[in-house]
Length: 295
Ligand SMILES: NC(=O)c1ccc[n+]([C@@H]2O[C@H](COP(=O)([O-])OP(=O)(O)OC[C@H]3O[C@@H](n4cnc5c(N)ncnc54)[C@H](O)[C@@H]3O)[C@@H](O)[C@H]2O)c1
Image (cartoon, rainbow, N blue to C red):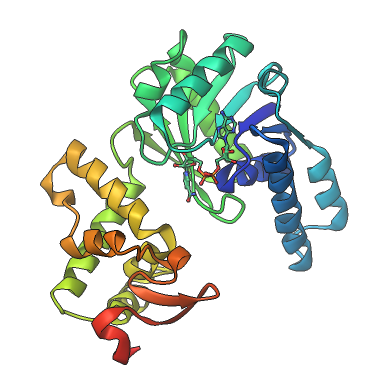
């Protein structure tokens, strides 16, 4: 089928990649041609990585790239699409505008999906005249590696849109979980509980970040501990989500003081060089603050 992906950033190019790999024709749209080119370049790099690891052949890589077209023209991107997936920045007004613009340029049958990680799909869908075709498709980063997609069912989503979304997820060989539209969906909500509690444990000196993380990787089989994951996601991003979930779901999501302090100090995790760990050239080289000597 024809799929339009709006936004060629971290998530958009990955969603275009996995859709084209499954044989769909994809149009990748961003607001500037430089962003589109970057997205297409990232897809080529990631596909080449797959070829280098013998996951796919050169011919499969070229065929996948041929199925992806880049553009800055919204109308051209969406007019023939059966499915439109937006992956523009996490801003409610922007997402509503994008949904509404898409609706103006497509037929009534087109399914319009949002890759939002925390906003209400119900509210985004309210920008549509026919909101029953809206649904959430929450991919995980990076989409070409991560197997899960949460299918988020908004208040308005009808059975056809829900089934369409589930079929699409299975078709691109990902695993679907279906979630009602609530703050944090299923994964962010549970992942954050673990992250916030780990931060409180560090705050109270119960154990070092590395020991807590090792406890969860070796003891529970998690691929990465909650504090290292917090550094990867960004402390500012986690704080923002915690504040949102606290507002929506209650005090159990109250952000710990130390998380707030670190964000105020610009210690945002891997991207700033320090969070619960110290990072150099993308590698973990030690622990932050009083745990430094134990690193
Ligand atoms: N990064 C993650 O780990 C992650 C994981 C799951 C979901 N998400 C969600 O995916 C969405 C995108 O996040 P991202 O990390 O890819 O952001 P990003 O900043 O990397 O990319 C967003 C892209 O959208 C483009 N854009 C802005 N306005 C646009 C418009 N009107 N039409 C088309 N493109 C437009 C920007 O130029 C940019 O290239 C957000 O809703 C985010 O919450 C992100």
